[in-house]
Length: 209
Image 1 (spheres, one colour):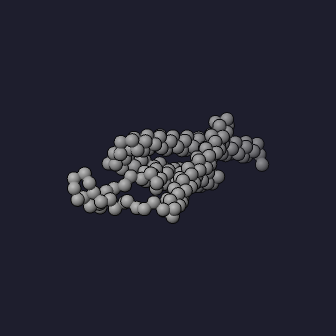
Image 2 (cartoon, rainbow, N blue to C red):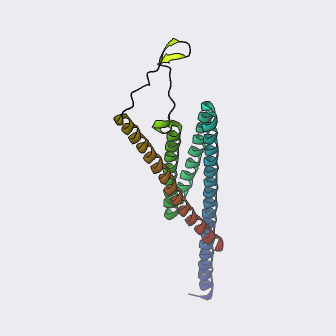
Image 3 (cartoon, rainbow, N blue to C red):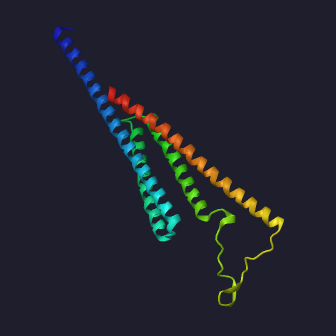
């Protein structure tokens, strides 16, 4: 091999190496951008939860059912949009151009916990709307009215030990269901935060390259 051929071979090798480095940099830049977008989506989710919490507190005070249902519809739409965008990012990480299965799995883990968190949040609100069995308001729409302001109440029952025990058991079941749902939300939040910390570590590593 003469000097010219050696120079060509060395030049080709250097160009290939430069292309590989450029490709790696492009992939890192794309990964970094996708992870930042994912954190932005998580911020949207946090804001949606805060809005839902405020709306539910207002509903419990005012009893405005229509406003609360409209809020639930709006929040559901927001969460669906967030989930759709995260799935798109996940599919990009699985693409051969990116090939970051580990990050795709990380996002999938967050999605699973977010779904559980939303389900349990809805459960908590439904339970709080219903209230403890012993404290629920009684409707008199099925009672008989013989005179104005006087009626035979169908809810009047003889207070017995059995009835008291039944009510206490219903309250205990309600309390346990509420505590379990709250604990489930807390566990989901802890898991989500741990996953987000992994995402931040990955972002820091990519920025340091």
